[in-house]
Image (tube, rainbow, N blue to C red; front, side, top):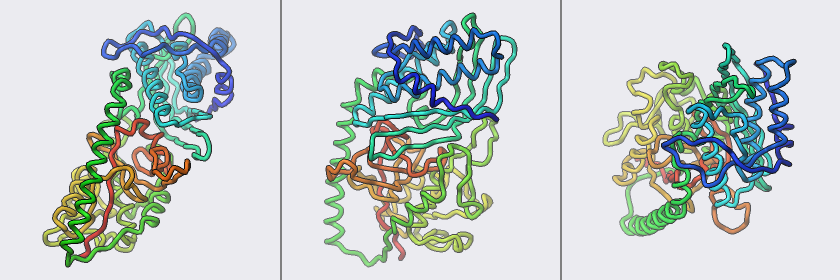
Length: 442
């Protein structure tokens, strides 16, 4: 494997001015509101490499990929999408689709960051190459991508790594050009190819107002519920989460390595994302709720010594209570995504039901951002198929309000550790917050 940095490339791009991206768009996706900004100096450097007879095809293929990544990286710094068509083959549909999608995604990310007053001052992407296969006029490259987003102070930089990409290229008269870039991350899950980014921009304010009205209703309901709890009282016994302990667990047992599983609390807990039965190079199951449950469990006093015996705060075979447990084996009669410990919707439904009916176990509720604290959960909305754990919050701008840019999360599958939430999901309208309230002991 060979690691190639592109920091110098990003510096070169920072001084570039430009005009049009000439790529056609996929029929299912409208034209972006404006074309990409040209990068003539980078284009000249790229074409010089591609036309140099003394450089081999493998180096030219890597140069094309580096140029493509550099264009995307510097777009985020400049605040304007650069012309990706320089290195994408737009004579074929797959290349047109790639140019259209990546340009639209870049512009929408920048749009969301501007809405949130989030400024990036540096961005680097570094590929770690695994295989470069060249056959005649086609090439197929597999790599893992690492990156660093640097923000205006006092927001700390965000590092990620281990994002697998499979890139195909075609040799044209002008050199090697990209055809496809197959990869997965939260952005692609949120906005798959074919997304109408122009429609998302047009509806952004309306969707934001709807979410804010939803959060206002949540607050009203919380006030009524708290008043009712005070009047009725209860004979139940509760424990309350040590949120520092839970958030420390979240920062200890995760990393920023994507799907490269390096820092999990196993074999104490069974790791769900280990098998790849369909052969796509990615695990069949996500470990995200497994990890979130572990953080909650640790905050309520869970220790490794009690895992195999399933002692509280785990719940197993308690009359009238929903089971919530896991251990180091998958042979315990539960399955990965259909179990309240490891399934996102199952855990959320369990905690809501426990609170509504005052059952033994973890109790929680949907909450507005203003209620979010350490060790609360963030779900990808509207399907609730991914979850992250809040491990940091701040008031960096001193306005006395928890802003979206002031929340930091840890997660598995995709791995993040103390990572800015706004760099996971640029559009806050695609997340919903979940408050872990308490644990009923008896």
